[in-house]
Amino acid sequence: MSFTDQINPLVTGLFYPSESDEPLDAVACYLKQEELLTTSQIKDWQMLPPSVYVEEVPVADFWEPVLTEHDWYGDEEKARTAQFQQLKAVIDSQLTTQQVFRVGEYEIDVYLLGRLSTGDRAGLKTKIVET
Image (cartoon, rainbow, N blue to C red; front, side, top):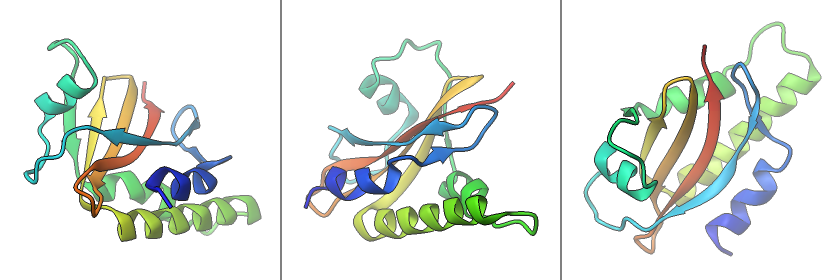
């Protein structure tokens, strides 16, 4: 089963929270080198002009807002957290050398990318809005 086939059922109806809750999608990346990706490679991959801001952030920053369960959570929020826990388990089992890149400044594309056992890179894409 392909990475996308494993991920798509887990992200269907799942939204990443920010000022605007956004869907998550499986993505593939043609960059196959063993070394870590750089922000300039992300710009090339996404065909972005040099003026677009790209930064790498810790992988934990991607998961922290969706895996932390708060006392005030109701059933819906607890179910969403459980879905993200399941998604993270699959991501962790499939992708090594994970990295997270934020692209843009207010409406930010977020990519969580890692290496599959084949050497290909794949991961998740979502958007967050910060004003």
